[in-house]
Image 1 (spheres, rainbow, N blue to C red):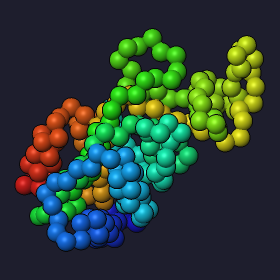
Image 2 (image 1 turned 135 degrees about the horizontal axis):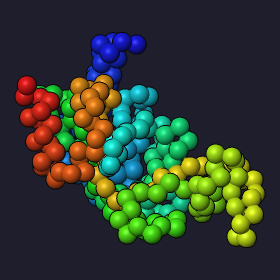
Image 3 (image 1 turned 135 degrees about the vertical axis):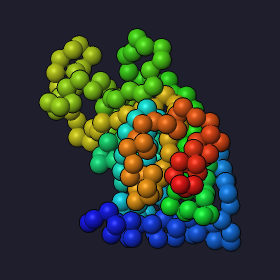
Image 4 (image 1 turned 60 degrees about the horizontal axis):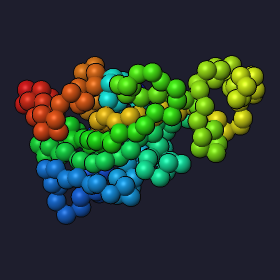
Length: 212
């Protein structure tokens, strides 16, 4: 599908999502801090395939296929092709531009999460591990070969249900319409949202992508 056709299909669906979320009137900005509310809103973002991208705090972004409860009751799991992204939600804010709904976005601020793996860095921002079916974690070493290591260091086969999981020690995530001009730009994936306050990032989107 060409870019023009993709935008033509997805932008109306993004607007529909926003108007369904706010059926009476679109606000300029609204926030949620209860985990149940945040979970429900994020699940709504994945109701349509290919509609939304999640921008990661450092750089890059992922497609979202599912949002689930995490074994850690403080956390949620955002799942991309079987890869689990785990974080502790603190505040979810929807920022709406009524004159350019395609650039409206959701900003998720996350609380700190202690590392599970062995790390010598006090400033670690995320860690990639293997989550076992019982919710415990083990080192990623051996994942590519389908193995893990027991407490004595012996190689054993990875059990069924094991999945790669990235745990985030904090940071700012942004959910954007994949078909928006910003969502299709290289700039969207450089972690800019993690270097600005909520107000600064909103101003940047308006000045850089709407008033042109």
